[in-house]
Length: 219
Image: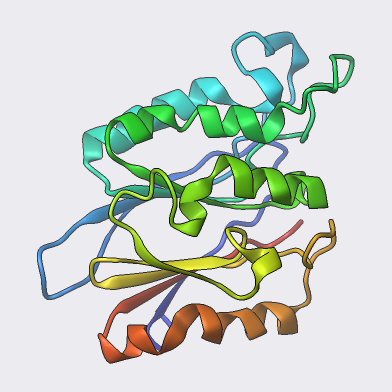
């Protein structure tokens, strides 16, 4: 914990890495839990039937059940939603399957009343992928499947649903997109820093909320 902020970072050291973490909000009110997971890319085309669109659907399904059993309120995914935005090499590249497949794999959480809030990684860093994330995950803008999360804020219109914050009970969560708006380039540290205060807002301080900041480190 640094100055009241809990930083969650994932560094992608392997081609495929999975993490499940269940955090309990530190508060004077009734405790509640949220989950955190990392990369769900899958690179083995021979297993495409079980893991379509370069997404590790089989492992996601297992993690979903663990999150449901633990009674988390929502799940954060810290980047790398797929291995490729389109499909496995050698398979049809249209329609683009990566992000749509990852979105569909979250349905078990939605059915259980659990939210799912992702942030992009370098495997979905294009301008087109940014639009897909905004379309397939409306909850990042306060739309469908937000399940009790409120007060959604983004730094700017073109980062809406990409870099965003929301409140849940006594905590504010800030998810910072690493890319410059509309481009597959990593944003500079200054740009990420400029996003923090608008996403934090005065409300978090006024209501003494815990602040959780989520960003990823690009390999």
